Amino acid sequence: MLQQTQVKTVIPYFKNFTKRFKTLSSLSKCKEEEILKLWEGLGYYRRARNLLLCSKILVNDYNSKLPDTLEGIKKLPGIGEYTGNALLGLIFNKPTIAVDGNVKRVFSRILNKEQSKINFYKLIAKNKERLFRTNRNADLVEALMEFGALVCKPKKPNCYTCCLKKNCKYFKSHNKISKEKKTMRKTKDYDIFCYVNRKRQIALTKKNQISFLKNFNLPEIKASNSLPCYQNWKFLKNYKNSISNLNLNINLYYKFSKRIPATYSWFSLDNNKEFVPSFTKKILRQVSTLF
Ligand code: SF4
Image (tube, rainbow, N blue to C red):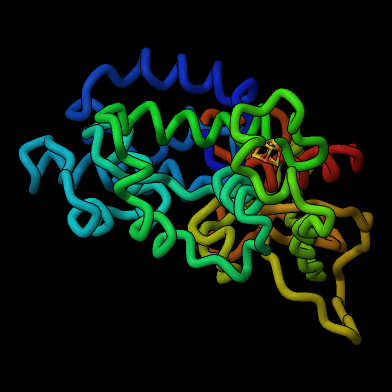
């Protein structure tokens, strides 16, 4: 839940989630719709789907035990190098470090070397004798992340009170490395087409081909055509939305209709028991202004 999401946002979701699923087995038996409903508003729904898949695999194939090697753990859906190392360190106290943005910044400053010029896993392997001198590896994983977030902060690092300043090349150097440039978010243009009826309902389908919204309830969505010719569709409005690492520029069209294509179902504009992602909820709010 914490990937790309702030702690204060996650807390109520985490509490609800752990109240509902007290064991791995209860999670593995849940339907995808239910887990998505509990996740509603947190975004990045692939995390919820992967978590559910992981629980099923662990219960069915691993006797409900997490593998304790990086190779084994990375076979689970959604677990890559970072999450794998975090789990091995935090759960099994293995000598490893989860290299997130905070950790990269700390190492890069201590060496006063740009992040793009460092192979972090090689660096860790080379210095393992020094890094893993105690057996408190779980604490080391957590401490390094917190150190980057609270002391060696992105904008104003607390160098004068920092316990590492004697060994920090960034602190000592007159030629300090410059700040990492943020990667630019891509902007994409989309047209969205909404069938609406007089009962304040909108037609949604899961048959969309847009990769970041696959298998979610949405109206029809298409990459914008530079020469749009949308007969019978009325333009409602243009608005911006962001999702994952994309900025979306959206043109919203609508049509009142009693008939809808076979793969669509009617959903209320106001209240739905079924899971509807935040992206779609924003569309529902815009369409509500028609009434
Ligand atoms: S001295 Fe400053 S730059 Fe170096 S590790 Fe500490 S906080 Fe970071």
